[in-house]
Length: 602
Image 1 (tube, rainbow, N blue to C red):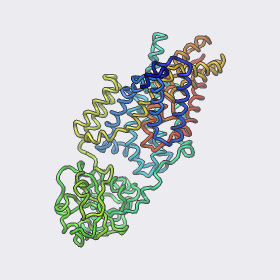
Image 2: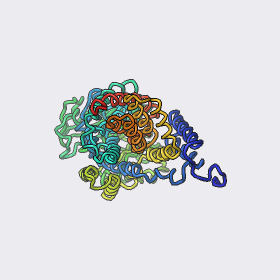
Image 3: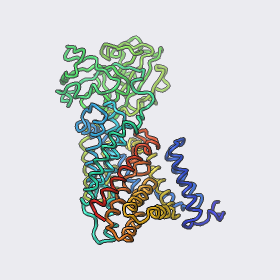
Image 4: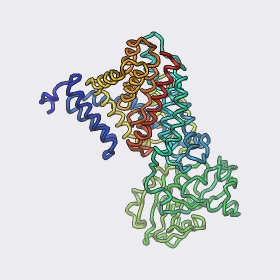
């Protein structure tokens, strides 16, 4: 129908009303993101839809982002990261590398230094994709706000990518553009003298500025406010990696809302339990805690529920999930102990913990006599909820989210797939998208995670944001809006080399915040090169300004695709990027404008 109107009939010409409308749509989209009344993906998609309806974008251009290589790569990396997390492989490595920091600043440094170093030698996207779930779980375990860690980590990874030629795809794109002008590409470490100072200065900013500029985005109700408190018993398995480690070293004192009440060691009870007490094979640990802490406890390798309920469930534990049920007064098992009631044979589930109005039940799980109103934490197959939802034996039946124990037997396989993927992409044996897709297929095929878990692992909101951002970027290029903004900014700067260098950086940075980083680099590179030629100066400071600015977009979620990957997991708002990332943008810009001419004189 739109084609019947002249306004919508043909592709829009450059300049004029298309550029004006595109500018208005971009501004309106940014305002919608800042206000946050709608989901960020819906705000971005809404902007693209308006441009599509106006005829500025063709359907192919509006939807091209859905098939973009970067978006598909990110989707596949979500699956690979979920597999590494699901098998517990990365959590083990992260726990050992990051340790147990005493302060937030220490935690931030530990989560920044390693990823920043790695990002210098491999693409930023897989680094962030792998670190997000690992840091999220590690932060929860050590009682740090994940919102205080993910954004600094992401910024450090981006800055780390500036330290070598292969650190980001943008560096390689600019190197190719330089080769087209001079016949010689940038060297592997040519950008390093500039990248390292930027990384160090950036990390100092990230640690100190996060105290005041980065908000704690924890939910309004913390896990410590959960009124349901369970008593459960866990046993240290034979050959457990926890054996020989102290309670502190094993991380059994770091779970919020969990208290180790006593240890039963061959009939000898240790209570209270000192943090220096060393665990032994066969120890039975009695905990009191909330359901979130019980879930984390279930994921520790070498611990299993000590149910002693005569029967055990068939199949691997990794295929089960935790279910909460509330015992009704009509349940036939009321008045009988869990062991005598043969709960497993009656309901095909095992009771691993019992909650009773906050009361601490000082007895083994199997000896607890059931009462109406008791809340039971069960280990069962996922089909339990559907089978028992209408059962009058229970007032309530609900599945605990993210409660399946890790597939520890697949941990080595998941790490092998991960390392192979990274090596293949880094050595350029195959494109990153191919390496990521093959790795995702392998982890699903080898059951490191199921197909349902793979679908659930993908952050669809982030992918839609990435896809829609390509549409807005294309409209800015097509209508000439980007070129108009660049030209106006350069004209204002006059003919002073430092002023022009700052103007080139500023234009590139603004484009990076509104479109893909590679598009920003490609768009501003010829402007920067021509500006240097007109002034008769060395173009390398301008080239480096474009390279840095095209990667360092910290002030919006769209500034870099890894910014979008932390948006949901960190619980961030658009204003967080602007408030915390904006000053970092300015800091990096000032340092680049000062250092680049010193390293590559005009």
